Image (cartoon, rainbow, N blue to C red; front, top):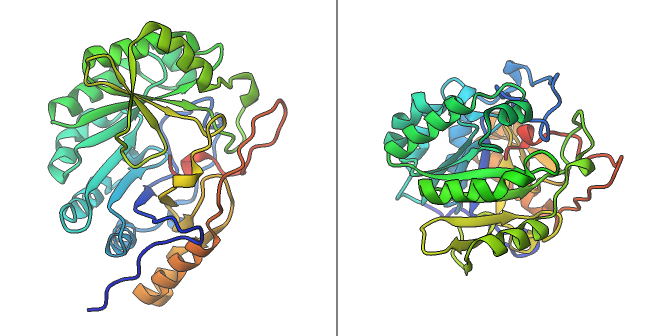
Length: 332
């Protein structure tokens, strides 16, 4: 059998990481991510679970070694754990790691199932440890329920990384406490600058916090040592003292990370975006349904040929988002 062609973009970067948005829907409405009154895709526009799996398996055949299931909130999609089990069978057969990003609201019910599927590490979005503040940021979130999900996942043998978006005058003051809690619990923490994706009900410029300033503050409070190990994503990492906890910084605005980009994103309706910050995309749903594997390969190659060198994120008062689609559409 002929070897499937490798995934190399026009800038010479090897693509080894696929993020799959299994749904654009979410059971929360985080203020920095969504408008409160969101309109989601009609269900008949979505790829079937088997189609998502088939596309992901083709990426594995062509050299992808890491897949992240995301959304929206992936755990609201019926059949999501079936997808995890199917892809988990590829671990050791081309795939090195299957991971998940979740808001944690439904995590307790499926933690054991995810572990059985081969998921060994997940990201949980958690922007505050104060119940009232958490509910304000998420509009509908129940902190106790999320913490219960995190505990269930840890008990199932899944390593936890907390994702926290730094927000001026909203949770910036809580970042040191969050890092201390992660050290106590044995979790990693990634801090993220808010990104200009999709229209929301607030001006993101009012909430933007440069992580350079956050890191300077944390460096005065914690012993942070640079850690060169990478998980394949855009974060830069520091070890926190003698603990196993790592602090990651994802800084799309203050420290562009595009030179080493190794990822592409598949939306739940089958569109492949080669860059989070650009609108160029190819339709893999049409390619798969009309052309099978050959059509899928041709469409993937087209996406690699249009992958830009970098995004062009900017945040300024009153500025329009970099792209009109929300993060939940493309997948976080």
